[in-house]
Image (cartoon, rainbow, N blue to C red; front, side, top):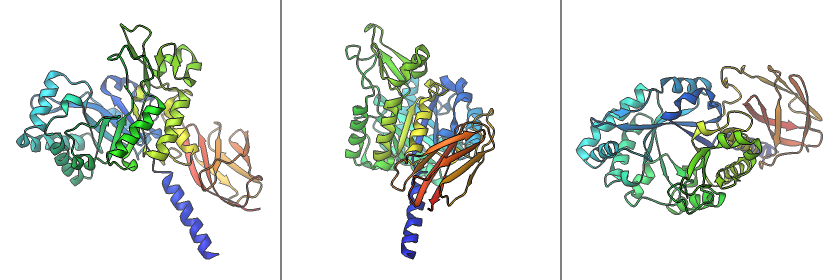
Length: 410
């Protein structure tokens, strides 16, 4: 009996530990800084501020983001905030500046020192490296290896954004291995550059191909995050194919939130995002988002879909959503759960009058069929149908989350 109890304890501990392990990485570009107040940082594990690039003197340039970092860390003290360097579209001057630094070994140490100072002075936790295509030059691999050494000495992380199904030939195995994780850009399979290919630019099948591609490159699934788009492309006029945000197409009709195509406009609706969360839960370390400000900041939010889907599968994406303030308008939630162990009924009280959503999972991660009824800030949960044993209880209200072990005894 003692061995069984110890086994169950270790199993629950492992289950709860795993529930903390999934990443939700969101990019916020400088031209969207004005939307920073709308983002639920509680539902992110990583925030990438983008993009900073060196000027002719090797000084990193980007708009002021101090308020954003402060806001994110106030709401979610566990969040990891990084500066993303590079970007998919560089000016001629920016591209030349990168080449002068990356490809000339004697120029690297001074610039890396400037990166370290930039990270420290802006209260950041690391660097996301996003040089792409023509910017991936001969010195790329040696540069990231040197950058990693310096960041590691300061207990800072290094991630990278890489294409879905293509590896730049100049990235060596050693360089690939130094990244703490890789954000797979599993989107833009087609777009304005391919007006004669009017189709889904980020299908579920493309996501599967992308994960398999990087696994075949020798990257462990725990070092991969699956990129999902909060935008789409409209091919109605092939002479003028353009991008649009998820928010904009849902603003046209809320029913558009649950489909992936309207006419010749292609994007990812809520069901597809849910499927990709399931895919990433089994085959990667989480989800990456390009980009946060294209979301709807209400009940149709794709970020909420990601957060809630991970939770429903027995994972959490931060571990602090039940204990921190989610935007200034919300009061901090405290849940009182009793009795535990429970028999036929369980009561959950909150210090808020908001709706309480309760889910129960068995130790294999399957969601149990239970019923609940709300009376103001008190919720009754009927657990009479559960067999004696140990379960995981997930309670959510106003975006706050609390997960704990539940014991049923009949």
